[in-house]
Image 1: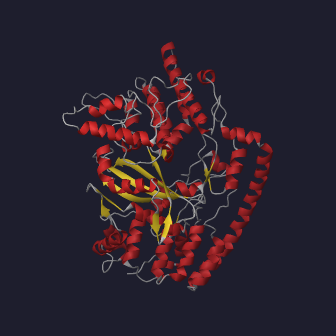
Image 2: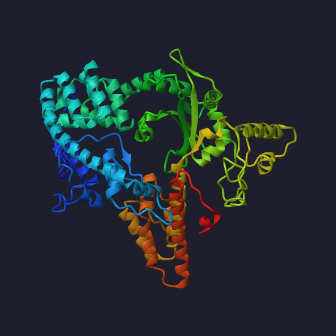
Length: 617
């Protein structure tokens, strides 16, 4: 019943150094993982490495054959069309100053302005960045020496020495805290689980150097369950793990399910009011976060609550809705705020995003949020905490939750969630201001339309008539009575929708031009973006390229790569402007992309003063 990994097999790439328990695992890793081993003077012996300008420029990085710990905090480049992340702020500053950024004009990227206006300060920061990089190189040298002591400590099972040496070796906070817990754990199997959760790189390194796992007793069922969840192993595939590690006596699926059922009882999972899902009471989740972060009750606490829908399967269109909760504090970095590790999934139900379903399934959650928004304090361990709920959703969820029709639809009369702007008033610079919506207005209109719809003999279109007149787009009462200043649109969804729309207009030009479609497809392959496979109908007619692109599933990383490399598509488009008609069509597409990029740059500025003529120009 012990874990045994007597022999390991190292990855053959020059800059990897990862070890695996079997040849098959090693071969699979070499084929599927990306390796950036190419150098200016030579190439990795396997010859299947990825070459990019960024990695050629980063050849100063030490070539280490041992596993390295990835830094948790990330620092992003502040230029509008650059999406590179760095583990150190100094590296990010150095990148911004020394790498050319082509931000779209005529409006200059505000980050470029900032760099130009504060060149003297930025030069000083660059010098500090270079000094910081030198310090990092020195740390890498001392880290190698510390690893030798770490191996000696493991071989002698000197746990206190392991902790001390690891503090020198790994500066990542989570890794250090995980290793400190070793002394408090009752069994060494719990130690392994702690390393799996917080610092798997250290565990792999210790195993490769000392056969660490073979010295440990059998893990508990609780540790196996945590391992199963961490590695996303399904119930159907758990039998393979049981067979591989000889867990037949105590670690079968039946044992794991029993422990899981007990844990669910302790967590407090209950059905949603509509019965189509499960939830953890929101007040318990917030209280747990407050205790976990050790917050004080001397200031108001911001709690971000988000909802989003999705498809459960690719074959069947079964929808599900997710609700998440996160505490926001000033002490958190931007990377910590974005990290999914700081977000707790408290609600899940099978269903769509309609006002009726939201009203039924979110009844418990809505009561808690509305009470907190009205000033009711939450009691945690005898202390009262003032909570400000912040609602963050995409436009579909936001409009349905607050009782509106689809304001973002092209044919809708009222177009804005926050004001009374109509489709005829968009872009009207002569209008000095728009009347903003208020929470009191939403509550009053909700009561009016509910009374009219419930009155005897009311026609079926009562709500739509009300929304078209005095309701200004409102069909129902708002589910969450939260001020508009605490409702934030999800910029991720907005950006993705804009890029999808631009991509649809671009791919349309390749419907009747097979050569252009082939060139576009080559650009997608170059960007490692997979398109929907080409299908033929019964008449052997090929599927239009635009439909293939529209049916392809693009996530945030793929869409950002398309935006960052849009010039490659435009270059292909220019090659096929053979006559006046195609030149005009292709020119309109290029202008559309150009204007969209200018508006995205404009949106990044905190405050903008612009005249109507400047806007039109």
